[in-house]
Image (cartoon, rainbow, N blue to C red; front, side):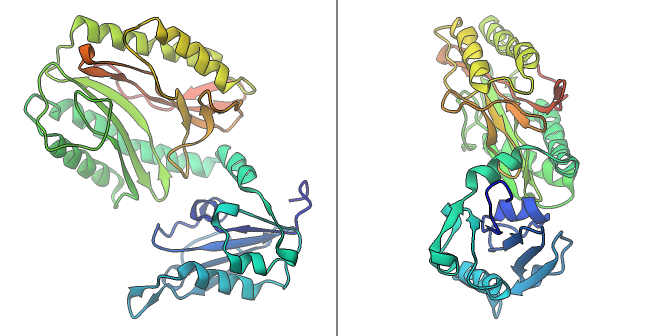
Length: 347
């Protein structure tokens, strides 16, 4: 705020409010927060959530329901409570442009609000110890899901039954409902939601699994050879994808170019034609399933201490039935990366 000469910051995106205050209220509600240049935080929460443990100097309720029915205009209601608690008009304000309404704009001097979304996303990249604890806990669910998958992904099992069993395992491990569940549960396919379809022997089943734990996400992938006996070509593809991780771990350091790493991996996997690698190499994970840093040719990010990111190389082709994707998670330290996903990697 000092660097941008801001007196106020208004956070109207739910993940940003959670990042600042530790508040998770779920997707049905519209929390909002403001912080002044002295670091004092005013937080507006749904009335029934106003007593949860948070980090704020002032917590105010808004009416999110009338007679047990969710109100359609919650954002207007929470904004009104927040603006009523702040001096008017506000001057030198920073806000998240894609989540601002005309009521907030009108409360600012001359309607001017500096767009700080890019700054917030950049700040959210560095994971603090409390955030790492949440992300590690989310990954505990992935660990038990992959262990179970290696038992139940057999010829004849229905993709939907695998999905249901993995969801149940994740809920049991975390001891509470998930705040998200995804991503890829198909056999003989690049990915996608489970189908009412039986898995066949000889296929490769890509499981790219993620859960939401109190608003934090997990995201990593394993590939299983259905029937337990991968073909020679499937093993070759697995080995070539596995060979990417030593490259990632030796290259990734604070200040290194994510785009340059992507290009090196692309060139390496292009040697496996006609098998193809045609998606990003990875991304950050946190309060969104995909955030910075972007291991992607469309961004030019550089690694920084505190980045929690994935590396997910893959090779796909019909002759592989349908391909191999493996995904590891790393945290960037001052001396390089630490791998966080110690689950078995083999087919």
